[in-house]
Length: 114
Length: 114
Image (cartoon, rainbow over all chains, first blue to last red; front, side, top):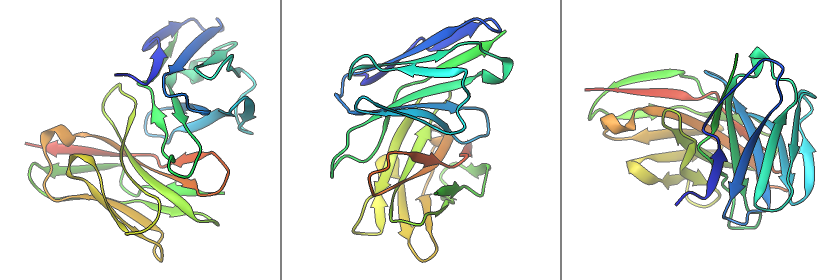
């Protein structure tokens, strides 16, 4: 049973055309993360939400934005994708509290920019 | 700030041989440590985690890891690998305080050779 669901699994977009990636969770976790993963590189944290509090990493490009309308859903918006934005995008969730420390990941969305 | 170093980008090993994947971290505070596995075009799956207590941690699929505070290491081991263990393995760290960021290493590709 999938608990963190990312749609779509594969997304092809045109250079400069806005694209939205979605993530939903059935875990009722209060923290949600968006990571960018490129080949042979560590996952790069773009943003995270702690409940409704949005936290942007300092080096996340302005081109990337996020929305979390409710606990279950989180979106990654790329306003004007460039070729360098082609990557795997991973959504993860976590519930804060003494016994819950690991993040649960979705299967990712592989973004191709043409 | 915290960081994770995975010294080996690729590790080839024959089937049924033992393997060790190395991970070193740096942090100014106490941390939680994790190993994740990623199969092609999949999200990350938690293998094991160290929170506190016994420094030898056992995880799924026969993997184990040992936390060594003095050497700031958390190496992953398996006594006998299978073809199905071929995947990429990521070491990750999160500080045990309130900050939510999980920092990943660049990953180690384990290639099991028949």
